[in-house]
Length: 479
Image 1 (tube, helix red, strand yellow):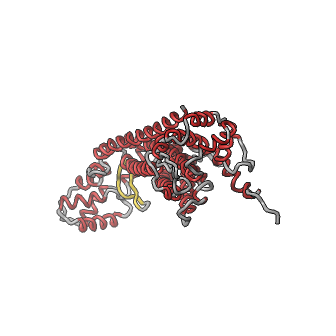
Image 2 (cartoon, one colour):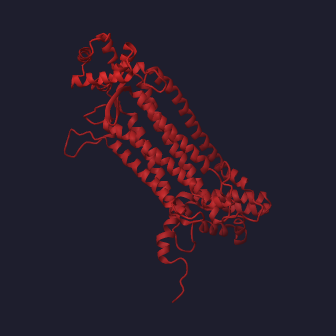
Image 3 (tube, rainbow, N blue to C red):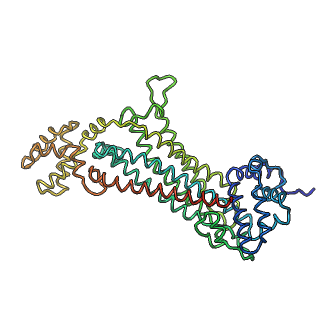
């Protein structure tokens, strides 16, 4: 049998060529930054002469980004790393270019690239989280006294306010932001200098390359720096949790925008009609947010599945073939958040319908039971039982006067007046007396809003600070 040389045509077609295109798309700029940083560190450590450093930096700077981006895999060079190295050799000679690879491996370079890309994606994701949260905070501030029905088990439960509901969503978005920030902190650790897996015998300075590349510390243990995958799986988990959170919100919004509920009306810019039914206003923007969130969740689960049951070592399962899924996950998650924010920014609230629904269907009778406890000294269990009997006797008649009359019939010895019963059954009163921290009373919601707005400023400042840190580091490398 005639010996075959690497790579086989099918391996090149199915693996190397697609990976080459992905690497150009996602990692080219970061690869060049790594070359700059590693070269400068080698010179500072006396491993390269100053003349060699100047020659290499000039060669790196002379690289034609457009030519590299347009290149196609031809089998001459195994991957983007070797392709770029060949261009540097052409610019400054093989001997000098070869010295740039002292003290490093494709292994630590690759993981560094992945971390540099992931941290940027995390910043884009948190920016989109902050944008969506800002829109919901604005809705909360405009609806501190907008009474609406709250649901449990998908059934009308008690009156609350739209602000109370939106502030609840803002809380989980703040936790999504916190999880993203924590993931960023563990992603933004430099593995460069770990080498193939055991570092190097040369006196390199890993802290220096980390500083030059905008990392905030080291992925210290060289074995783990190459082998551990939790820097990606934690990011995937953060995205997955956020998409599950958003899915619950989107499901409510879709329900509220139905004709049967009629709580919300989206701008014409976010609805489509039907090709046959002229009356239709289909909230397609929300439907797209739902499927995009599901896609991002599925991609996050794919990342976790691909990493599961793989060896704790350098392994392709968590490298080139997995990276496009990371980008797709972040891309769809950001699309979800941006579309939701835009749609909600233009939404109209039917406050009259909300208030009417909050007053219907016996939603306030918990407060009637509470009033019996306060006024009559009853245990809550006895009061609950009496009110349940009253509701059952009223049937579908939820008029406060009918409830008061039925209550009096069932328990003539009560001292409650009809006016007191009707006050207890008023939806606005129901909300106002729930003046406990975290509750829907306008005073409590207003205070919660102030705290949520302060947290919003902190989130936005965090994004701005980390983005500036990375941008300044990148700019400094190019000088």
